[in-house]
View 1 (tube, helix red, strand yellow):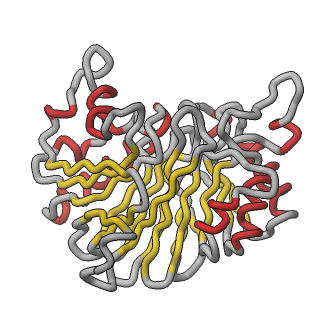
View 2 (view 1 turned 30 degrees about the horizontal axis):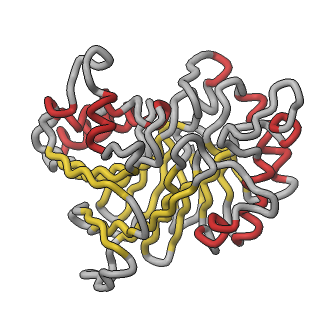
Length: 311
């Protein structure tokens, strides 16, 4: 099945913002769904993952096929993990979840998720979930390989394990970035059938552009880039300067997109204080600098094979 689709489930940073002023862009926190071949790949588990879980359950009830998914965490701040406790497929005994993410403060991925789901903060513990879970720590120059038919996933060291068992595998490359406090963040580059998508949330720009990210995103079909602030003037405002917060202005995202020769830029991780109108204004302003730019909104779909976006 030649399918490479991206659906945005949650596009906000920091905290959810439901209400009449966020109806178009949406108020849920970070979560992006990929359907590649028959495989399901999810990046981040903010509150946007909850609706995805509901849809996966409907598919499971309709087809009888077990849910097999790969879940990648960029880091473990609340807006990137707070939806996992309410991700219903994790409660099904037939579900298989491959979970990858960083180690932080000498804690493994499993320890961090367990801590988030530990009473009194959560009524359900990680070990109480019925799903089968394979949890992996990402530390260095690693690549995640996923079978596009079965969804089975595993990681390999790109310097020491050279053999790829199947050239049709989905390949996900990992890069550590230190521009987000306190312990950095992981970027992901998803490749399949000659198409390339880069997810770079929670990063802050550098003078001359983030050179490591520019190289990592070279010739990407889609660059999903943090653009939490409105424009550079908000980022450097003397009264409420955002410098050092670990987030970018859209101009920073444009610089990476231009220097990486990305085909499409998606502005992502919107500030919770920005309503629909302000984000639409940001999108129009940035399109003057990089025409093929779109501000991510909940429900937005990009079909890589056709390179189009739809509701």
